[in-house]
Image 1 (cartoon, helix red, strand yellow):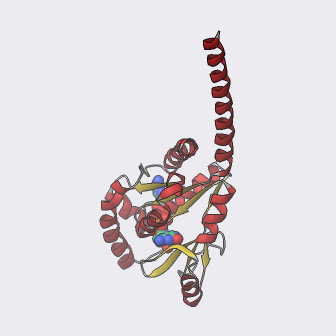
Image 2 (tube, protein in one colour):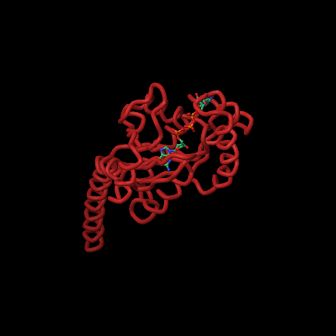
Image 3 (spheres, helix red, strand yellow):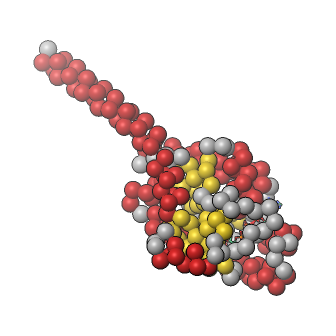
Length: 226
Ligand code: ADP
Ligand code: 5GP
C-alpha cells in the first residue's frame, strides 16, 4: 500500500514536471530566434541563393548589411544594402554599431547589431550573407555561450572552380582585373570551409535553397533541445 502510494505520487510528480518542461520548451521555441550565416567565396551565389530562400519562405528575414560600395543597377537602399558614405560607415564603427565589419574587395561591409538583435529577440529566422572574414567575426561574437545554438554557419561552395570563374565573369559587375583578384581570393577562402557547420554545393539555385531550408528546419528543432 505504502509502495503503491509512493509510486503514484512519484508518477504525479513526474507528470507535473513533464508538463512544466513542455510548457518551457514551447515558450523557448516561440521566443528563440535563429541566425543563419551564409558565407563562401565571392561569386559562389550567396545573394542569389539567399534571395531564393526569402522567396520560398516569407517568414525568413534578411539581415540587411551596410556597405560603402556604390549600388549596382537595380539595387535599392534598405533592401539590398544600406548604402553609406565612408564617413557614415566610420561613425557606425566608432559607435560600435556593427557585430562585425570587414573590408571586402576594396569596400567596407558590416552587419548591424540592431538588425540581428531585433530579429533574434523577435524569435524569427534571420539570414545574413557575409564574406568569410565576417562569418569568422560573427562566430567570435555570437558563437559562444547561450547564443551558440542559435547561430548556424553555412558555407556555400561552387560545383567547381571553373564554374565559379564563369559565374564571376557572367555577373559582369566587375572588370576582368577585379574578377581575377576575387577568383584568387576565392580559392584561398575555400580552405576555411571545414570550420562551418554545413557545406552546401550551389549546383542549382533551387536545390541549394531547398538544402538550406532543410538545415533551417532541423536547426530550429535543435535550438529547442539545447
Ligand atoms: P555572391 O553573392 O556569392 O558574390 P552572386 O549571387 O552575385 O554571388 O552570384 C554570382 C553570379 O552567379 C550571378 O550572375 C548569379 O546569377 C550566378 N549564379 C548564382 N548561383 C547560380 C547557380 N546555381 N547556377 C548558375 N548561376 C548562378
Ligand atoms: P557584393 O559587393 O558582391 O554585394 O559583396 C561582396 C562580398 O561582401 C560578398 O562576399 C558578400 O558576402 C560580402 N558581404 C556582404 N555583406 C557583408 C557584411 O555585412 N559583412 C561582411 N563581412 N561581408 C559582407
